[in-house]
Image 1 (cartoon, rainbow, N blue to C red):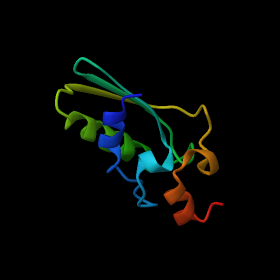
Image 2 (cartoon, rainbow, N blue to C red):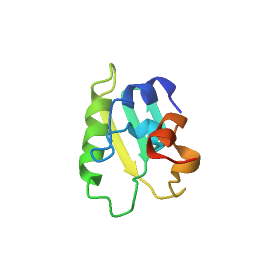
Image 3 (cartoon, rainbow, N blue to C red):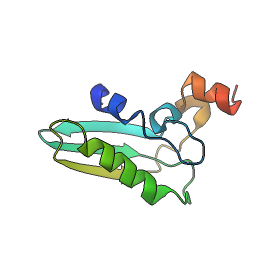
Length: 98
């Protein structure tokens, strides 16, 4: 996991929850090799209507990082997203998950 790129993605928010994808625990991995960045992430639900938007926003943000020339964003559903174990404590508090 590239921690610098993960932090770089923190401003990208879910358009319905207005919370960071990183803090929600939706970003599973971020890697960078040379000028190529790659993200594996999931969605809050398999039928999420914002899937295309989220992929575009993550890709756009990656391409703004110095030295990143290409960006690949892959949506995965394994492991299944569980905010009780994957979200930050702040997000759990805001969503009332405890």
